[in-house]
Image (cartoon, rainbow, N blue to C red; front, side, top):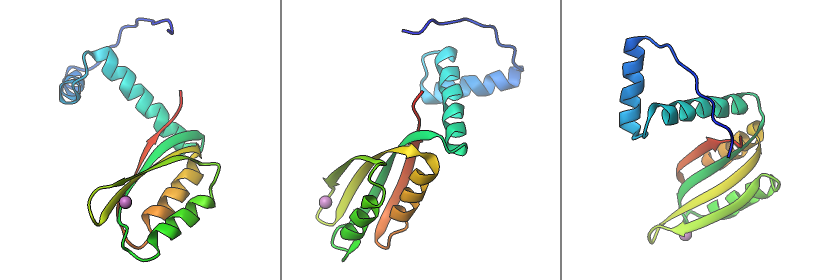
Length: 134
Ligand code: NI
């Protein structure tokens, strides 16, 4: 485990109120946990902006009866073989499929692949959940 350092933080009262409301809303156990979360969130966003090596999960919902959609989605993924770590397919009901695609690579390429998949005709919903490695 990494060594933990303590430091004092000076902050305006109204801003601290915002922080404490945030902690309550997201059920953080304490201010330290919330600050760590916010710092890491910011670092992840920076990595994405700077086109660094990042990770993500792309979630897609689509009707698998839609002609050609599945093969098009697979064809696109095969154009980025080094980015796709794994895919999980869940049959939600008779029509709808949920697909989760785990990705790792340069941010711009991940976004490009996600946009191409989300933009396919027949995709009902798509969302890229962005993260990064410390
Ligand atoms: Ni399915």
